[in-house]
Length: 510
Image (cartoon, rainbow, N blue to C red; front, side):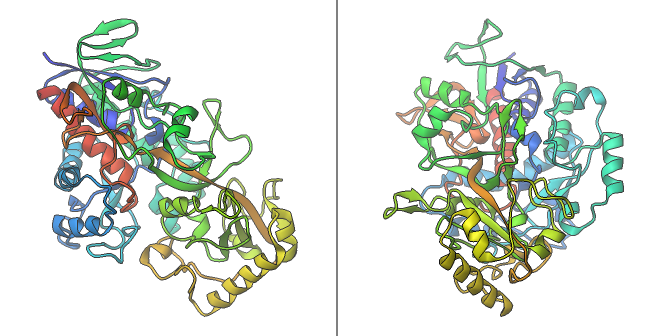
């Protein structure tokens, strides 16, 4: 019997282990940390899958042709066309297979494609999906990486549409009902365990050769799937490959580049090494995961009415309501005159009305402001607190307010795209009600997206273009076929599940 060892237990690793086992292999799943799920378990669990079956009743029509047109419009010459074709064909099939083999069930996510206005783009609730809430045996949930302490047991849909209630949160907590990435990991893990996969935690594999790997001190001859996540938790690798400083990390501490190092030692060709799933984020003092500092992604907060972002000059620099990936990338703007990254850190600024209606970081409406949330009676006073030019900052706020009253943003087009108002309310409103508030925002990432290049079946390719026998990769441990693009909410996990499934099947049957 073919033996397959999967390294990593996020969406890619679990999908690979399940697929390899279904294809008849003897499978071991090795996770470096003490819990299962990695960054997937901390996420919303969203997937972006064109042509999915959730709208099989015909109420919404999507097609591979439309999706291909859309992806072509986002291609800056850095995508992998063969892998994207494989993704478009396989991702819908993978969702169906997972529904047949696991307790995973999907519902539409109320977000359109990130660039809905481009050719082939689709509107809200079509291509982005999220898992339905799920209950699994306590013996399974006990193995999963806990959710972030500040994340309530609510789906994105419930939070966006206002369906969330304290009673629902209490009931979910009491019954152990899982949502988002937790639900995804739980469904996949239960299926993996039921299929007879040998699941090991606290098992870090750092050696590979054509004869296999060393697991828990034992050399095993096996085919290996790298699904270890990215390399964002290794400062040396970050400095080597990313083009801008990274001050904000939101993922699990296990992403230390183990898969990347194994692939490099095998002579693998590398791709998209300077890219990541970028995002703006904030740090609440005391926030940690496994004893390491962690940031919180700014998802909906920056798009709220009465909120803007300004750089170190006190000027707006982007459409705050666009996708987190595009805002995060905008924070990499470099000033050759001042020799600095002008928007890292930047500031999220909002007025009293926004403060009274929405949570920002760990602070809810009506709660006292912590030291990291700055407050001032006027915009000029706030400029002094955040250390920007008062005249430029006041002029920026006044200009935004004047345009917002007219329902427009001629500078950056905020509010002009369907995605901008996906949070359920119009995004443009003047900052007109004092006092005014500001919080530091850092350029961050949810995970790197560079690694060994693969073919469409996850086989790692050598620098000479050949396939490295017995070595496979998927998810953030592999080069992303999307290049710089972030087509829609859930692209990261959609890619992980699809290519994890393909890599696992190939490892079992090659």
